[in-house]
Image (cartoon, rainbow, N blue to C red; front, side, top):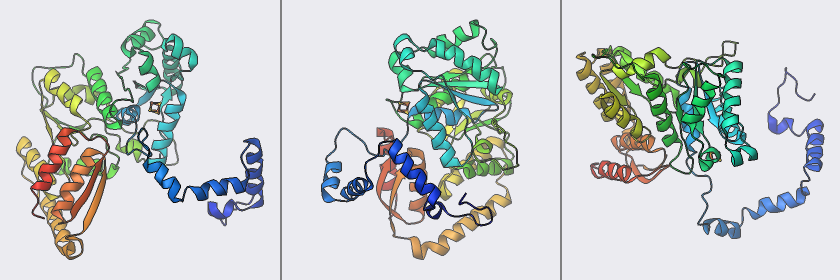
Length: 410
Ligand code: SF4
């Protein structure tokens, strides 16, 4: 083999080795690929003005949209709970895409199963796939909870998840008391942040059923939202522990998505313990760290649990100040000196760098809450945002962003 453990070659060099070249040639033949000259000709054409104009002329197609579909967000929420296996009712290809996407992004193994619906199920309904799928998932992967969401296919034919799960339990493939929360996640509505919201609401509704008590338990719930920077979750734990907050993070996927390499594979890493999540209904209040990925969940908590909810984005100085002051007020604990020092260091770094960053122009793009947080931070640095693009814009976002920009001195 051309690869030698004592002298590991980069893929660009490695793929020039005769073994790989032979492999590519065989593959070309097997897949009926056009000749290399043809491929090169097409590649060159993609750099021409004609190709550019064709792309800009498109109206009914988005190329590389800055968003993904609902089930992707749903399974990100699901792995934030202890021993939870995401189960996607629909076609296998969608789930392979979600797993690949997350595995590539986080560089961690990401487990999610599918009911593998095919043409038959599309015509006759996916009940049998759901029953067999739940039976296999329960028997093979030993989860503590299975969180079910849907792909486009199941939504288009109108499969009823609640009824299907009840049927599966009645068939005895999973125990009656085994938690199987679900969320319908049609991908032709909203995006990954909508799916996150739907699944978070589904899981909380399932786990807290019948758990409401007369008095609160003194805890504060935190919902991170569709968060892809695990350092932010660690920082949330750092801040709440320094402030002495009795915190419950709902959907704590930090360890799952950034797990240490200890030489042993664990399918379920960390996550909010299910009994702790069940108690979230008796918390003092729930704080979401994102607004646009949690509207249904917050509405549910307010109306069904009768609990106070709030949104704080601890980004930059102002956002973090507001967050910490709210926690200080809620707990009656003063801001510890360690946090004052951390804040002072951050302000010092911003002051020291202002000669380089002030007045610079920036373009921002991403999910609405990420963009709002960054927008606020950039304005604090004196940077001028000139282009702002978000994955799921709403009139509320537009209003909030415009108000923030209008309030800036620069
Ligand atoms: S948009 Fe629909 S079909 Fe495409 S990956 Fe998402 S769920 Fe599957």
